Amino acid sequence: MKTLTVMLLSLFLTSFAGGGNDKAAKEPEATVLICTGKYSKRYHNSMCQGMNACKGEQKKVSLTTAKKMGLTPCGICYK
Image (cartoon, rainbow, N blue to C red; front, side, top):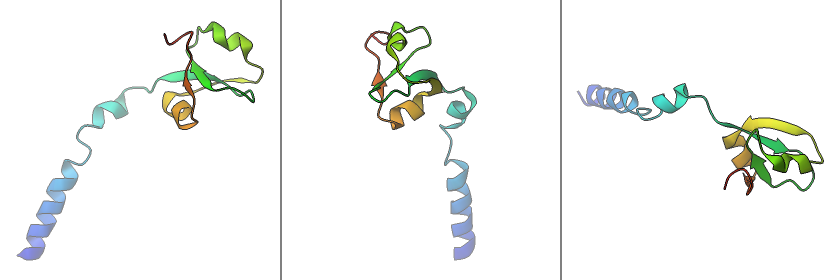
């Protein structure tokens, strides 16, 4: 009986484990532009004039990736 109770409780908890994440998984993740230059510290939107100063390659990455890289929002395009 104890094993059955543990199994049912485990099944119940796993059915609710990702309840709030279903919506986030269906929505496309925001993308931003980054500069791969040596001194780059910001991420930008696709229309930003700040990217004109980029000395490296311009890449499109997810917002999550840019934040994990330690980049912060550009002061021109994210006022």
